[in-house]
Image (cartoon, rainbow, N blue to C red; front, side, top):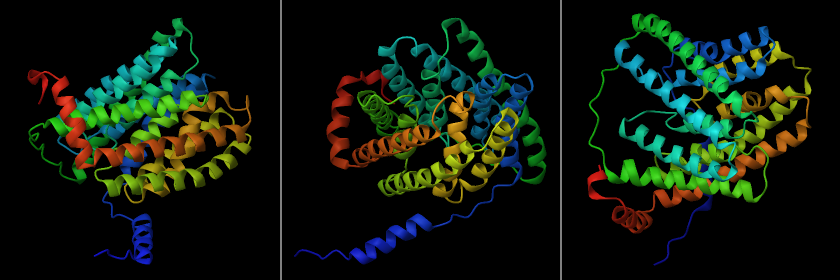
Length: 361
């Protein structure tokens, strides 16, 4: 007997999921330290009249967000490993810029490898997101070959500064709150570590391929949006995150338009990005869509602040919205497949036959 769908109840459930505000025990010191980690390089760059250098180091400062709530020794080792990963991903992304045919394979490789590592070691949110974002921004950075060592050095300095801030932040906050014990790693499974990572990397590649087919300029935000959506722990989480991201981006682009209409100089850009970072890290654990409203102008400034005034703000706003919609749709499709038992059985069986048994977890 066919059951009748109560669309009114379905709509109520959707609205409830979209407006639910999650509780948070995050202390204010964490968003403040995150703002310092990504903002101080911008202030230094502004002082020396090289905001473009400060933006690269600021990207490295995002590694602070991978600081776990564990004892001091464990969290600093984890952060140093993340700093190495961030630097390596950015370096590979920058190098892929010089050979267009390598850009997509490199980003797919990074997405697969970083997703595997994050899943194997149970790295929490933001997971592989910022590693892939660093690689994507690097791939679309207009640098010359001889500037590569400089750019890699700048992002490395940003990660070192983030590590220093993380140390003093940890020393202070561990006096206020006991650390979380280091939990033993659960057994790695083929489906969770390998299969999921390959599907995620494939979707990142498909999203980038779509952007290149559509001839999108600086489409770094397409694979990032795809990855942000597909990382949902369940199909419901993937769907909610996709809707949150599109709605939040739409509102955030309005805010971005207002900011870009202002006569921003190097100092106001640096201070604005620090304020946005503080707001994002305060809000993201409570409501993702609200945080995306401020993530949108933050990422626009992070990737394009050095070239503001050289193009139309309207064109930039339109491009970022199209990037987000395209990446989110690909991420949603990938998430549906990722959480489909039938797809997992068929594709997982093929992948198992392709990978030698000694390499399977």
